[in-house]
Image (cartoon, rainbow, N blue to C red; front, side):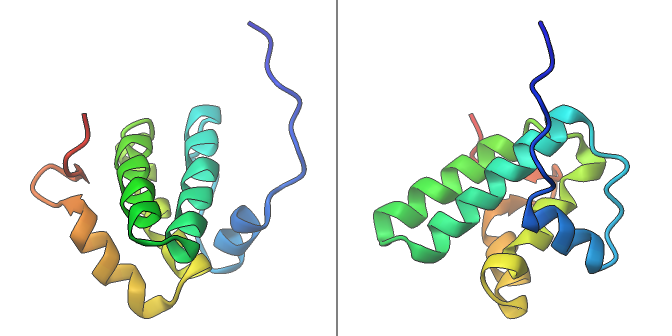
Amino acid sequence: MSSPKRPPVPECLRWLKENGHELAPLTGQDRSALLAIAHCWELYARGDDDGRRAAAMAVRVLVGAMQPHTRPLAKELIAWVLDWDDRDRLWSELVDSSRGTMGNAP
């Protein structure tokens, strides 16, 4: 299978780097999952109750496609779309901290 052509660096990745986050550990799969998660956080921010539930469910699933050591970047993107204050609150609602993965993932 051939690799897709790389699009320009999306704003969310640039924002992460500008805020001191190392992106070198991201594999191609991690990067794709993280970009999808960024779109989910946008849907969460703009969505009604159904949209927010669907976005949260999608984030839970997509985080599972990332390596454990790159998953914290998904949490940081909450502040890119919403507010810094939302980051810890929203992440704690979604994450099963005992396993280090998103809760309720299939």
